[in-house]
Length: 460
Image 1: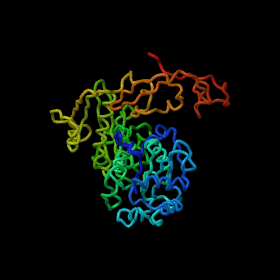
Image 2: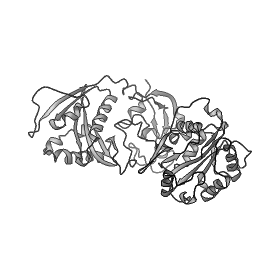
Image 3: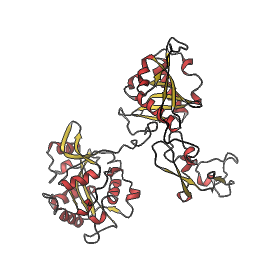
């Protein structure tokens, strides 16, 4: 099928955006979603038939709706129970079984009259979703209502499923492209040039290279990611990886690896899927950073080492450093040279073994944006590497406490950080599980059980 809309939608070409990632708390204000009645579905089909030739018959559409009422989601400015009450937008999708997706790609599935055997029942998890029919009255736009529709479709049953569609005409194709669809679709070993597909947004896409690990997101895949070590548990993972990939493989004595500097450094932990697989250590000096202890498990090699070095350099630059120093063994020297490191002249260095290390240097351009003492109190108390999003100490601050904005000076970021107003908090009431270090455990949960704590920012 296709899309029905008014020409006003195309007076201004909107910038493409992936509708799966629309912020419904922002765009969905003033809209409601609901399961439509039969007469509203019939009215939408009547309106759409003026623009879409060969649209499915009403009895076919109602049969699909009866088979699975979840296939239709309506949106409007208010809940609508009859066709003339208010403008109503609608999305009808086919939750396809595995056989249904294969039939869609082979042409066996007739989208004008789909066989019900290819469509899931409400209790079944689909293999993919097919956008069957969209009707958007001009009065409703297409952002707000659709953001709420997609929020309804992000349950565990539908989350991260492939989404396909066909454009009935050029205008429908333009609208689909503005929503993040692209021409061409692939499923397993099948490919279709006729279908359009919408990629699943990667929540780590805009993360910094040293902060793009999302637990569980890429489990079971070969996707690599990196995280700053914040716990003793993660530090022990780094030491275990070094033991398996560095100490054992290259016969390095334990004392040469565990040198007493692990608790004075920053560590980055690399992952393949959800598996800890690599690490690198960062130590700070007056005007330079030393990168060291790069290690990747043998079975996980193939790009993670590059990610770790790249992340370590980006991390240092975010802190304002532009000079990096290291000592690289001959077998991995080219790895560092890939990032612009230059080998110093000389025969190299040896420590407890015959392994020869060469001193290497990298000087980057001065970072245009970096952390500083003016980055804002909120930024500077956040966990290392997570300066671009609120930290745990900000969770208790109410939005009403915001009094001004402080620019966040982290490389590549354009966000602003709310500065909290000085306020009084009752720890046992406002911070669940909190124990006042000065007064011990609260004997009860009354307002007077503890002297209040004062939280706030330091004004310059």
